Image (cartoon, rainbow, N blue to C red; front, side, top):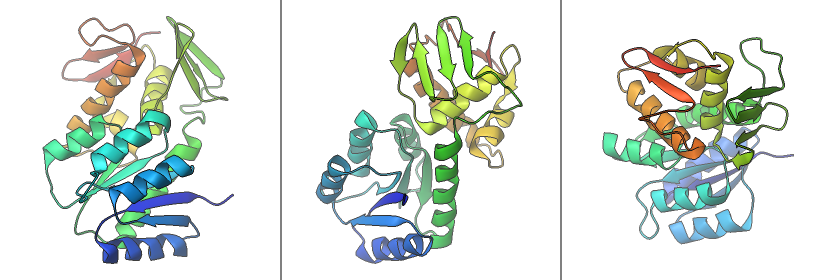
Length: 232
């Protein structure tokens, strides 16, 4: 089955060029030049990944991201002409998986797309040599085979990044995972000073979905100055 990618940008030249590069990699690409067109595509068909421009003339990329996250967990990469930390944090808080600042090289974006798709298709795989198909910790259940997460038997919908973070911490339960190690393991990138904020935003979002109070956490505990742990 072909991997389907949605690319949304009001700058037609950029959209078309990205589309060409992705099609050359064998992906089935749908192009949209307005937020309204993109929203119709999002509601009409299933995608494996979306590339969304933040600044659109009608419905901005953040609104499109909200629409996607209402029903879907596939990866979303945001494009922006503004290298703003506020924009990045907002996008990550809404469930974006990656951020690319314009101008960018098409091959860089293609590499980011491939990295996100690898994570999306393999985030249920075993890590750290663990063999148990199901992890159960104080009412939290992670089923590797079905890639399902429940809290007190109620299903929890996570994005691939959120699932990968949770699974890594669960596999390391009883140990404190340094922020740098968590970032390298999940994002597969070198840790930078700004990476700490990226991890914090995703942890916060993950806690919200798990119903985990940051002040009195049931699952994910923050060891200040070190990292995070799930006690098993």
